[in-house]
Image (cartoon, rainbow, N blue to C red; front, side):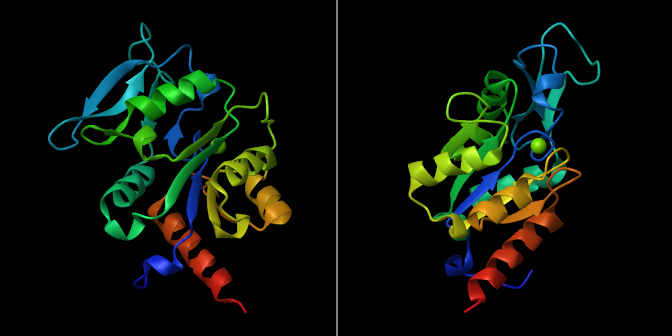
Length: 199
Ligand SMILES: [Mg+2]
C-alpha cells in the first residue's frame, strides 16, 4: 500500500464480527464461550474462547481470522491509527456471547479486542434490528462522526449490509466474504482515500 498519512484515514473504522473478525457465528455456538485458549502471542495470550464441556468439537471455539488478527494488531500498535475511532456493528443473535469474545480474546497480552473499541452496536433488539442501518444510526448519534468519514468491513454473506449502509448514508464499505483479509483492509483504506480525494 502506498504510504498513508493520518489525514487520509477514516475518522472511524467499523467492523462486523461474525465471519468478518472471527468464526464461527455466535448462533452456531452451543453456549457461552468462556474457556480461554492460549496461543503464541508474545509472551503469552488468549487467542480463542471455547464453550465449556464441548471439547474440541467443531464450532465450539471462537478464533479470529489470521487477517483480522494482523489488522487489529496493526491498529493497536501503529501510531498512525491512534486518532482513528474503532467500532463494531453486529446483528448477533447472541450479544452476550459476542461481548464475551470481545472481552476475552487478546490482540496483545493484556489488550483484549473490547479494549480497542470505542463504540459497540451489537444485537437486533431495542434500537437495533437485523438491518445495519440501525447500527450505523446509533454509531453516528453516539460519536458525532459524519457517515462519510466511516469505513465499514462486513462479510455480507447473508444480506448485503455494505451496499445497504453505503446507499443509505454514503459509508465507504468493503466486503470480506472469507473473513477479513489484509488485502481487503488495504482496499478499504484506498477506497476511502479515493472517495475523499473527489472534489
Ligand atoms: Mg458477519
